[in-house]
Amino acid sequence: MQLLDGKATSESIKKELAQAVKNRKEQGKKIPHLAAILVGTDGGSMTYVNAKVKACDQIGFESTLIRYDDSVPEEILLAKVQSLNEDKSIDGFIVQLPLPGHIDEMKITQAIDPLKDVDGFHPVNLGNMVLNLPGFLPATPAGIVELIKRNGIETEGKNCVVIGRSNIVGMPLSIMLARNTNPGNCTVTLTHSRTKNLEEICSNADILISAIGRPGFVKADMVKEGAVVIDVGTTRVSDTSRARGWRLRGDVDFENVSKKASFITPVPGGVGPMTIASLMINTLRAMELKGK
Ligand code: GUN
Image 1: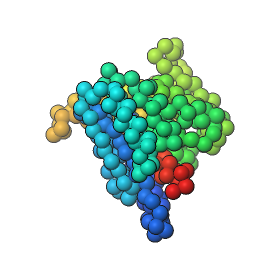
Image 2: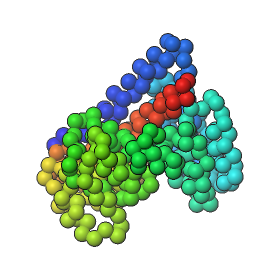
Image 3: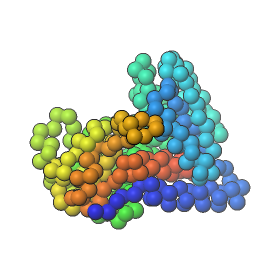
């Protein structure tokens, strides 16, 4: 078994980006500027947004964090999105999801200028992805594809099973891996809560990717000997041995599945850091696309 070390891979990407920033500075060019909107105090969302801001610092990007209380009205958030769309100093921005129940996430996403949508969630960017046209790819699926690529994993003709059909991970990932690209050209099965015979389908996968947020859901008997296993789950579970009282747990029963897998991502340190690296790649591109 070989560990798919997303932390190490993301560090190499961040080094490349830091070099690109350094080159730009030397040429007197603008430095990328990412803004992030965070609503409320959800622990997971705060951790992710802080990690995004930290990555900007590390690479040399500018960053702006905009925070709102849980009770922020939708109109205020929409007005902020509009002002970020118009702000020439901001190259790209994200609205961290999930949003509180009284806010329509799709309405917010659709209000973002597709040219600044570095999360790749806007329908225009998702449409471009489906058609293999230039645009911003959603950060988590793009990070997974990059992890596969940089670790030399062959995907062509492979059976790939994705568990979970969310708009931000499972659905776009299933399309990206089926496209006529490299990595890509997989035969993809997208499974979900209504799938019958899930265990049997998973046990035929050469590449198995789980994105459902159910700790330990993928058991060793669902995994083929030698499969590549990618775990997108990051659920906080109670852990009294830690001072903070919790730890992150993935969808995969790592201890047992790692004995059968050829490659496997750890949690934490697998897909999470790759999501952040992809967001940074998209932010640099957002600036370059404008010819800045
Ligand atoms: N919530 C979970 N993953 C993501 C992500 O990649 N971007 C945003 N904006 N919210 C998320």
